[in-house]
Length: 176
Image (cartoon, rainbow, N blue to C red; front, side):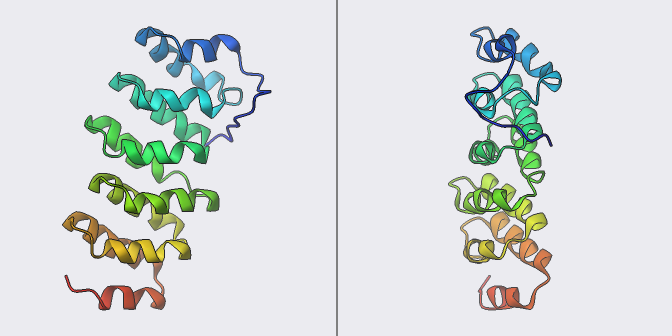
């Protein structure tokens, strides 16, 4: 992942940023496919609106761009997109969450365990398996009582990734 920055003094090419915000969906798509030439110059603020774009292809390409930029500012939207009605967007967003493996990403991903949509909760739990932040244990413990069986299952699996005796009481004290 690149270390994207969102600075008002960014030297980003005005043409690429302008094309990312173009009203024509085809222009936005092409601009997103050309981003690999500009990742060090494009601020995450130019990508965030595209994650909510009405066009499925634009959302999918924007997920890849957000992952490549690696800016934690995109994490709340990526967690939302893990529940996108378009399966390819949801899968890409869920997959991208696992690429954010830094300590500053952990609080954002942990917050996703309480998301309104079960698919987003599952994606957050799976992403936490790599990070294993101790601060996430209360959220994972709460997920053991989730209304969704899939979320409960993923919470148990996530706790198993911690490989820590401190996580055993969280599992053993729950009725399934």
